[in-house]
Length: 167
Image (tube, rainbow, N blue to C red; front, side):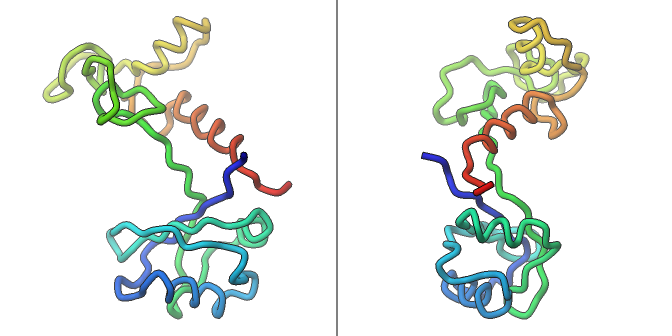
């Protein structure tokens, strides 16, 4: 079953509760209705709490092109929340360190040692692996956790393909 779209709202006042965030979204934003979304969780950010909100496809379509949402009489930035899982032991995608069965590898060169003080040339383990299996020619001169990595982009595209945007 497809997943519903999610957004993260940045810098919400630390004093606001989950219930207050939900109430503020409905009362302070014309295009938000109480049945259109669910406040899931929060995590501490630099400027306050960052709240993850799950929306139904219609609600997402109504707000996706907005610049900000009103919460607690403050206009706050938000973006689509796409959590890409990457292991910080082997730097492969799709799992986390606690569940990793692979050997440790370096984020910089992809070899089997810790990343601390590695001075070898950068070589993304994920792009190198993809190139060797699929004969692609992705650039490999970046860290395995680079946000501009082509394999990371493919992971994001895959996540987006699993979401019901209601289009």
